[in-house]
Length: 448
Ligand code: SAH
Ligand code: SF4
Ligand code: F3S
Image (cartoon, rainbow, N blue to C red; front, side, top):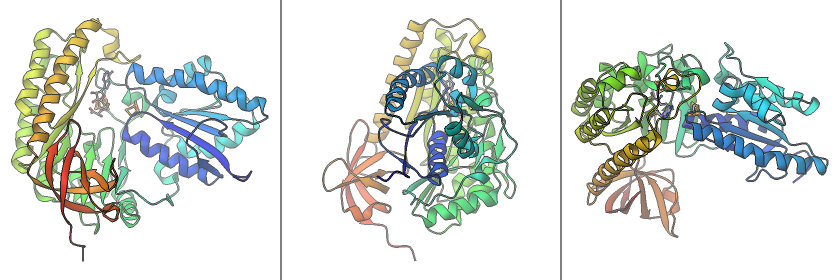
């Protein structure tokens, strides 16, 4: 490695938006000579891209910072400067606390300010003391990101919307990502075309409340999905994460009409009790959620569903929790994420009387047992069926390749590496706890 190449180490926590943002930060500083390395030791720049969603996620940042302080000292003893940058939602929400608890951090940068990173870096290399950039600037950060020169993987992330105006009682996102902003359709379509030209076959449209997209140039998310579906070479379209209140008739119709829109939807419900749904400020009842699921399944009978759940929100009684289990039974999820409620500073629910920890643990265990059982049943039901798989990389064993079904299940099959980046037809031979085994039938005929 020559002297003008600088070493960059990035650690990313949190949602797919953070994964995308980390990639763009890597692109931004690549222009300044920084190249990613696997270890923080002897790095010239370390970026922690953080998540604030639950207490544990935020605590991880402070324990990682303790380790980095020692590495930074070791670097200084050898006459080298390690610049330490904290980005993401913890930076946004706890910038001041970060500086107080970890004064050795050089840069604190919020999610809306990443395009200012090169500037801050130049200043950090010249000055001492922590630089903080956590305003919500009015300019569009996406317009400032350089176009990545790197090849895209078969599945590419594409943010179309950022921020949230819903203010659920428990959630920090409206404070960390700011007010909802939608990118114009033309910018989204241009980025999608570029990703497909660079090898993407599947695009995941990202947003904190993605189905609230209301950008210029298309009629809502449904209109945008229809525009994207006309891109040749793009085979699969997904979007995440949606809010039940922002589902509408035209988006449901798109699930019927647009073949490239995968029959899989992550639609967080959080809980099944109307009392708690109201306390959470979710804006719908359990019956309305079930009605929506009915409409979606009528539009797309093979639609598989995923969700997020919180147990132990303030005020949740045993009978409220029983209603959550009843809702899970009524829907039948292919997969789901579930969490114990974590009180977040500054959110309305944090100020209310809390459900005792052992109670939360018991409810979480019961809910997870039921969700695991539903996931197992869904996977078992695939055995013997023919499915198409987008192959994304080599499998665990030699001669194997791995990919994803339209329902997001990991699938392994014996097959040639040349299939990676393509869709192949397989027959499912076995369901394992977290994946499916399959036999390759045929590669999809080449597109004309
Ligand atoms: N925008 C999405 C999800 C945002 S965060 C939505 O509308 O649902 C992802 C998930 O984390 C949430 O769906 C919720 O289940 C969980 N979550 C958010 N805040 C939480 C908290 N304070 N404690 C526990 N889980 C939380
Ligand atoms: Fe958080 Fe999602 Fe609610 Fe927005 S809609 S406040 S991101 S849980
Ligand atoms: Fe976490 Fe921020 Fe994403 S809090 S989940 S990184 S929007």
